[in-house]
Amino acid sequence: MIEIPGNLILFICLIRCVQYLIKSPFKYARAFWLAGILTFVAAIRRELNYLPDLWVPSDFTLLAHSYYWWEDVVLTMIYLAIIGLLVYSRHYAWAIIKRVPWYLYVMVATLAVLQYMGERAIVFPESIGVFVEELSETLIYVIALAYLWRLNLNEYVGVSQGTNDLHYQTASR
Image (cartoon, rainbow, N blue to C red; front, top):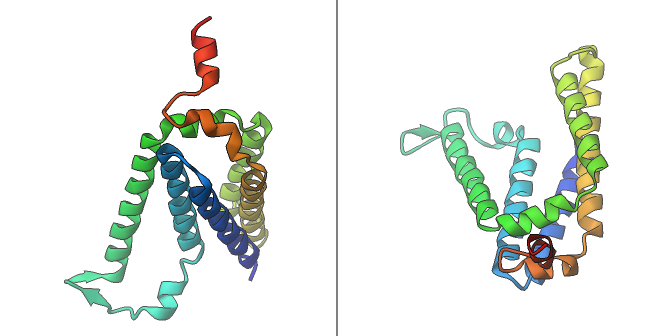
């Protein structure tokens, strides 16, 4: 029950990435936003990891492999696609990454450490650790949604061919 807000936020982030994919006029930008969509699909799948246990029989096999083997293969392909798309759109990704305020990185890193500590019951008792883990995850998702929501695609128009105007200005000095 505590995971529902996080899943809703992830789904809204996914929809926002779809909007940016549709709005982006350049192939590098579209590749970046497609990687974002796949990332949120993978995150939603991770959050809903209990669903296969409810719907897939434990003895399910397809071509002599279990459901979990197929799931791992599909998720691995998704992760490789994400990496490939990010490499392809590396200049656009770098332009977005370098404009993220430093304090957001600190906040997300702190929340990730808290999430890990809660999940492993480090410092926190196990009963409170679950709450700390889920709250930390949800706050990370809220930060992602807030950043996606305030992002202005027009700031990244010059990045379409792999470099931006700022790079040319600093490189020519």
